[in-house]
Amino acid sequence: MKINIPKEVEYIINKIEENGYEAFIVGGCVRDSLLGKIPNDFDITTNANPKTVLEIFKDEITIPTGLKHGTITLVINKNHYEITTYRIEGTYSDNRKPDKVEYTNDLIQDLKRRDFTINAMAYNKRIGLVDKFDGKKDLKNKIIRAVGNPDERFKEDALRMLRAIRFSSQLNFNIHKDTLNAISKNAELINNISSERIRDEINKILVSNNSGKIYLMHKIGLLRHIILELDEGMKTKQNNPYHIYNVGIHTLKSVKNIEPILHLRLSMLLHDIGKVKVKTTDENGIDHFYNHAKISSEISVEILKRLHYDNNTIEKVRLLTLYHDSKIHPNKKSIKKWLNRIGKENLDDLLKVKLADNLAKNSICHDEIKKEIKEIKEILKKVVESNECFTIKDLAISGKDIMNLGYNQGKEIGIILNEMLEIVIDNPDLNNKDYLLNIIKTKKHFL
Ligand SMILES: Nc1ccn([C@@H]2O[C@H](COP(=O)(O)OP(=O)(O)OP(=O)(O)O)[C@@H](O)[C@H]2O)c(=O)n1
Image (cartoon, rainbow, N blue to C red):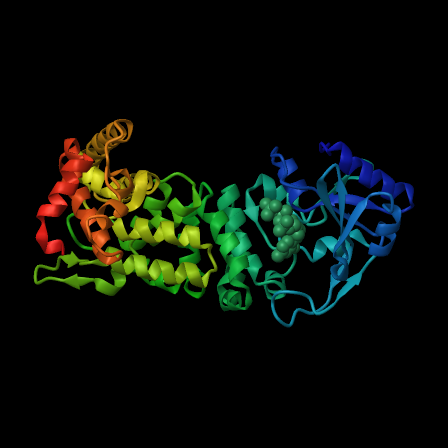
């Protein structure tokens, strides 16, 4: 078994070995190489302690990134390599980080404290693959299995429970029964983990090819500790002509229906999250979800803030969830109004959201929605190419022109500009300065 190691990594390993120590590539890069993928980065593990590593590479750029945890970052040609001393980690009283780190001279001890067998392999050219925990076999059988006792691994770092789901969705692997049971048992420990770390794992699951694994999170009781609102939605039935799935299945199908861009996938994940709050059932047993888009949008913002998403993502998701169920008519006037309201980029996204949503409903409406969206896109293209006016800044008059007519600066100017925009959207030929100023002059009620 031979793994291709980049020249710079080979240089690092050789140099450590020349100084009388061991060094291996370890973790994700070994896993990815064995899967035939190009690793994101190469981590190196060694029995040389951090001070020795600094000494060995005294002529290179080094950053004592995690000196306390035994990690030195070495910079070669602007590439960063983490070199970590073999560790045995002490007790974990907070389910996040070890209380203290002890170094060891034994590679196997270091591999033993890692999360999953597929992440607990090391390799160098001289020794070959070190695979004490059958990681290669699990890779072949597509299994995520904790190293040793899963309970202990999750108590050490509760994020590993979410990592198990993440690897299972990225690699399309199954999680071993004992590992899955241990996640069920320890699910609430995820509350000890920071929102940022949770968010980063959720993102990776969402943009993977198997985002449906979020249903597994619901089944094993992990989701309720992360997004309770979504967990409740997963159980919400919807008996009406448009839906053949409950909210959870519909939601996850809609996520799959949209391209793997984070804000789009988040929007699908959260677009119906308000349904559980607004559901009413009529005398015929038909479920209605009045105004659910507005509530979904509000709840989405709360969730995303809680998980410390950036403002840009939050705003996009707010808009897309808010309008996911609104009507866009396939005519110029409606499309221009939408362009004015949310802009071209968001409108493009909204059309994707509407398609993904509808294709996750009863198939009776699929052809109709595809046809309508196609029509809207064609009209949208024409409107944009024709340079027709659809925002206030495209108007032939400005706020200043209106002030010159004697109006005071303030809210009123905005109201007048919007009224003029309505007129011009209905009839583009009227976007003429004299004509619009004339209308304003004759509309005395503005004053
Ligand atoms: N909670 C964690 C995080 C990491 N690791 C170990 O540290 C290695 C590196 O972790 P990380 O860089 O987070 O993940 P990768 O496995 O490299 O995967 P990816 O780069 O795809 O995130 C892992 O392979 C694993 O051996 C661990 O045991 N427990």
